Amino acid sequence: MSPDIRETPAPPPATVSISRARDYFSVPAPIKRIFDHFPLVTYPPNDLPLRAGSSIRGNRLFVFTDAKGARRGSPSFNPQCLKWQVRTNHSCANVFLDFTIVPSSNHASPTGSLPFLLPTLPTDTSAPIPSAKLQKWAIEQVHCEEEQQLNLRFDVYASLLDHRIRNAYLYTLYLDSDNFEAVARRLYVDPSTTNALVRTALSVQLQQAARAELLKTSQYIDVSALEAEASEAFEALSTLLADDKHFFGRLNPGLFDASVFAYTHLILDENMGWKRDRLGQLLKQHENLVQHRERLLKFF
Image 1 (cartoon, helix red, strand yellow):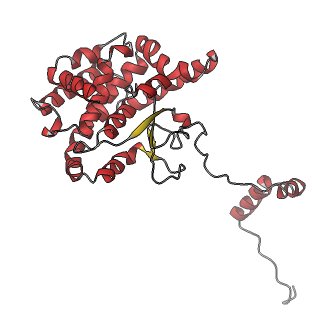
Image 2 (image 1 turned 90 degrees about the vertical axis):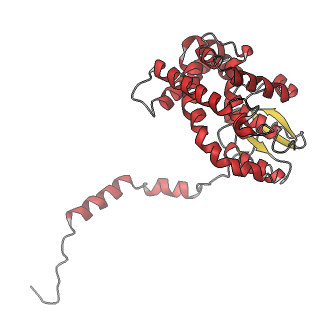
Image 3 (image 1 turned 180 degrees about the vertical axis):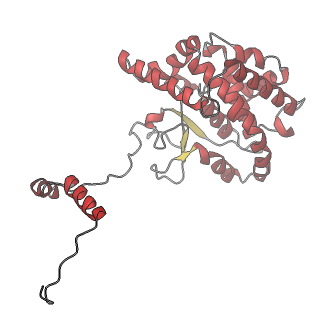
């Protein structure tokens, strides 16, 4: 062999395999030329619906409710929405935040969940305030240092609501068949569509989501355990409230009061139409929690 002629070494097997894979998945040249004339475009996020309260001036809070409930300022039938409906209604030291209730749904929310708020300022309606930032926004509006100091104490007790009571509520609303038909389907499914097949699909999705949420912390759903944990949570809240009118001895209701009320009101509300009212029975064993709910209902 001539010294001027060098033999090219064979590529390693891995390189050959990768090259063949690229050839297999590559776009044929004729098709590629067609797509070169129609490049991909990344569109910006969807704007809010044009009917999303655009004619309403001032702060707008989008929650689960119907048109009649929005006009009357009635409590939302969703705990998370009701919490912020009450909380933004009374921020600190008797300073009220003006806002208008707007009926909405998760599908209409830019963040994918309710509630969210469109503030008066800034006027840029593409920048809604999600529920996770509503507390910070409310504090900034009234410069309430007292609320900031209570945040740490709030976090300690919030787990009673976010886990024990919420889990029992999820089961009661979505997985108890009688309650689902009488309450959840009427409030969340039927208003969304008149199509029977779509209603069935939405019902299955809601129940599957609730079941998946409960199975995050347990291998199976134990109804007795859920009710027992809710009972313990009600007892702990009752002890915390004691003889005070509001939690943590506040003169005026705060975020924690609103958070508790969001569940106690819906559990005790006869208009919800509960068929199986085990949570209501457990809650009524604590008179101070019942009175707390009645006070806030009258106040707001």
